[in-house]
Image 1 (cartoon, helix red, strand yellow):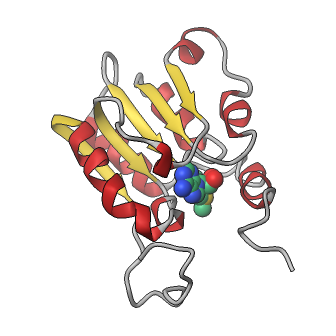
Image 2 (cartoon, rainbow, N blue to C red; image 1 turned 180 degrees about the vertical axis):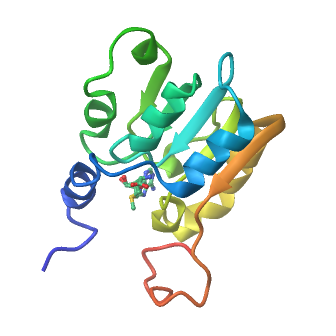
Length: 156
Ligand SMILES: C[S@@+](CC[C@H](N)C(=O)[O-])C[C@H]1O[C@@H](n2cnc3c(N)ncnc32)[C@H](O)[C@@H]1O
């Protein structure tokens, strides 16, 4: 049976996400934060890069992070010119970080619940400390009553 522990789980999931629309939460924060020119956004757990592209289209410089093998290639695919120049990518786990770049917007779409729950306590302060005054943060978290809450490989 296929599980999230399979090395191709997230690459396969993300490949199937390429053609969907921008997630509502990201669209809302892009609208709320206004033009991104001259400002940096973080897309944490960027997956296929759908939201990274929406942020780039809104003028943001984007640092995208995802640990899935091949994610950097997938996120960058098809991007050229000045949009590509505004994108940096880290293909590594959140748990491997000891700082995040200073940013004006942080978006983490359905990614933080999948990080190691023992690493989350050290990671969250990195996220909040990266946000400049007046910055915007939108993340999906799963509650402790979630039907998946018994899964100790996840974070609730
Ligand atoms: C459910 S997908 C969401 C992807 C994208 N944000 C979206 O909304 O489609 C979760 C993503 O988080 C990434 N991820 C999971 N755990 C991670 C970790 N510990 N560090 C970095 N990325 C992680 C996975 O590789 C995957 O791309």
